[in-house]
Image 1 (cartoon, rainbow, N blue to C red):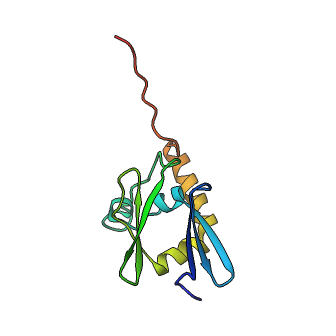
Image 2 (cartoon, rainbow, N blue to C red):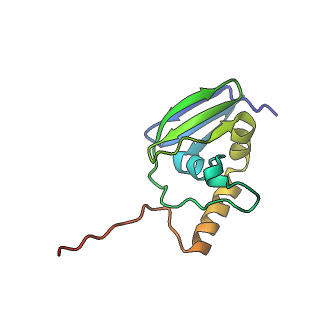
Amino acid sequence: MCVIPTSIKVKKNSRCLELTYGDVAYQLSYEFLRVYSPSAEVRGHGIGNGVLQTGKKNVVLLRIEPAGNYALKLVFDDGHDSGLYDWSYLRHLCDNQQALWQEYLDNLAAAGKSRDSAQINFKAL
């Protein structure tokens, strides 16, 4: 199984990163990539210490930076830029996207949280 994509494309209109391995292309939404960031901020600093990401439905991928020959650094418009997505992890996300996405939705529901950004209601005083 090849873990280095043969092609990487940013699809701004569909808001996803397309990774191609041979003749198979996977599309990972910006939101999916953001909520499954491999950073300590998201995963936590130990087993079971992960932080559920909420309000990321409309997050935008601003840029991609290479991290040596082993990973990509993704920079999002919410300021998150600390995750290094190595080739193996990106392939894992591609291969397990459906199950991971359902797990995320289930975790949001269990926590009573939302994919939407928090709404702030202002009152005139």
